[in-house]
Length: 557
Image 1: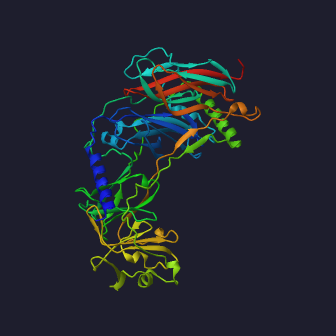
Image 2: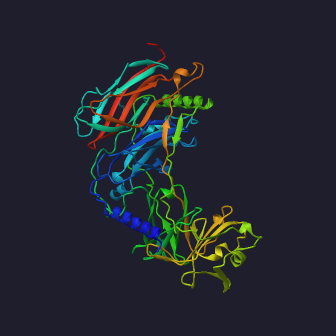
Image 3: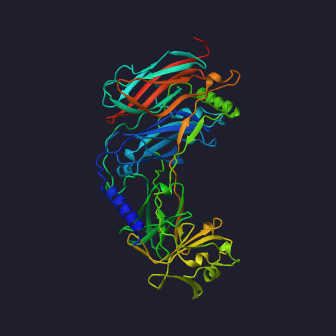
């Protein structure tokens, strides 16, 4: 037996059992913060998602969907949690219509508790080419006034003394110093910090540290650790679920790779997608060539939760017109403040390899041209034989140890094929190499009677023909960490305008009680009232929010 495969199968099995054995009594909670509440179409939205800080939190990934009021989904993404925080950004297409949009966030495990457990955040988006912005004000509830306050769940409100600025009034392009200090009641916290122009808009909180009960079997949606869980279901022609069906998963690669699973009584199957699969094209197919259908389940929530209330406390139309002007000016100077920092993932050690020892390698280009794979096998593959039978083909590989022939597994650019007929038309110009493994391999309980691992000279996977249904999809890659790069305003000539409604953004700032955290930034050419907004979770799992106001004027102080 291949010891490497046996070890891999054992580790995979133990990993799945670990997932199933996770205690899920504590309810995971997340909160969403964005760099602003109001945006112009064509701008970037920076977001921070905080996971309630519990020692036994069980998820490593959190999902985000963004939808319009009419439930049109404009963005979906997944971000990795590090130190109970996940952050990223998404672009608002300049074709978006003006209106309210909703961000919804949750972990895979939170799906057990229904949408009532999800975190939501509403934002207002105005199209920069929209000259009629009066309709946006139709969502008004009541007029409110934003003031300096401290909101803490479970802690009595108290005067805000924890957020201090070196001044209350600043001139344009002036340095600002911000000190943050936690109250004595809070030992530690992880927060996001946004310094932005105050918009005459407020979105009331619709959920705040509520308790929920599971709407399904609390282990139905498993927690995701170190990777994603792919869920699917198989139905026959009568749309009846197919039980105990073997399902294969392989990814496009230069090396053969394979996972397999069996459907349960409801025809459902699951695969664990470790970081090797991130950003990779995978193929899911059934054993055999029947006509059952494969349905891959989406983990993304589609729609909005509740209503989309909005409070207006000023001239929203003038504010949006000014923001439209700011974005237009900055775009004309081709200034980009957005920068991504993708995580480097090494596939080595994660790949589910089917074999470990080298086999017999041939490269068709080293020989005379051969018109199809039938001729290639006859001339170059001594252990593999193809016979024509009933207007079809049958290929078998000799086991050099057992001295008998059997149907091998055939991989083409890493993808497990259903039959040799799929590559019969390929000539020696389309095939780069063929690796023959002429003996038995074991993958868990799977007995593989030899392997042909074929690599194409150029990508030919799109030209493969399948008789049975297959599902081909691209595994998403977690969103890269995005940072808002503030320009060195003090070094920009005055004649070059710098209009920034957002002065500072930090998605994850750790705070310790008794220690000051100091932040420095510059004001821009934008004037008006600005606010410092700090949101996150304390170390004991309470959601906190700090807010502080200051003014920027054209007058020097």
